[in-house]
Image (tube, rainbow, N blue to C red; front, side, top):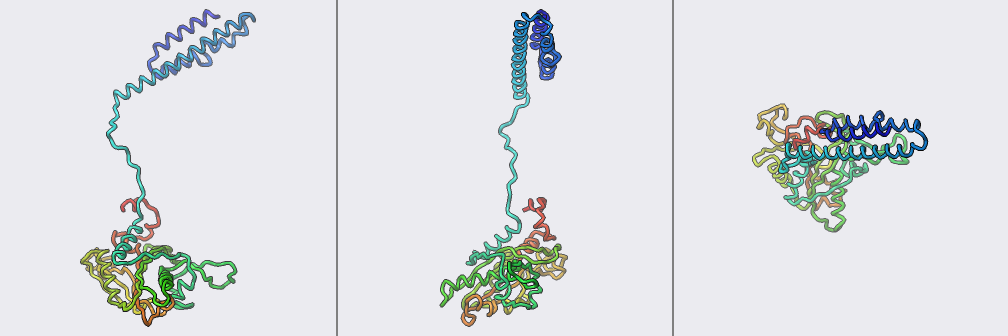
Length: 355
């Protein structure tokens, strides 16, 4: 039995020397170290030997098996090293090539527009003033000259927040703000608190998110951004309003842009006006984007209503001011030819990667 095993052992070592690739090595392992290999079957034949010979034969079988296993592992390592050397020689790597860049995030197009708008007003001396998105009915409507049951409330379908203890059928006093205009009251009361006897002048912009319970279409969403502006001081006139907004339009849309003001109505300003810019897609000739009027509406504005000034802590007999509000999404759509406001909230990478 030992003589047969020795011959098989020597043949295995000789065959291992001739192995030249991984497939041949795997075949060798199955033949000489697999369950049906002569050495492996020899363990089952030990019971047929006389008891006094079993230890000696068992030790020799173990030694041959361990030696073949070590030889197999050494051969496998040598073949891997050889394959690596061939790969380095035949398939050289150009280490000077740049790696694949990882994509990085960027600002949302609406955020870029807001920052552009704010930067223009900052150059004119405006400060950024932020206010809360969850408001009381008092700040969102009443202090802005919109009392309960005022028809102007129908223009702003509102998300009301039911508070603990509110009675069934009672209008909750807490809302998601429908415009950034409550920030006007917050700003005026803050500045008025600095010197109640002689409040300082105000020149602020108030960017932020607003919410309205509206049907979602290509032109309307239930949430969108606004940028509000407020100027309060002595002897502020409508000419200041027009000059400020015309300068902003030139900085925003180009030095040769034409503007116009149309009379309008807002409860918190009097007089009020909508501001249009000449359609820069058709040059004022008329197209589907401007509804063939040649003009694009970009913002609403007006002189701050005396009631709003008084509610903010400023004496309307001594102070005047103007305010304006615009939608950055609409301006972004106009600047980049985007025809559906829903694209801003769909997280479609195909759109966002263009900016």
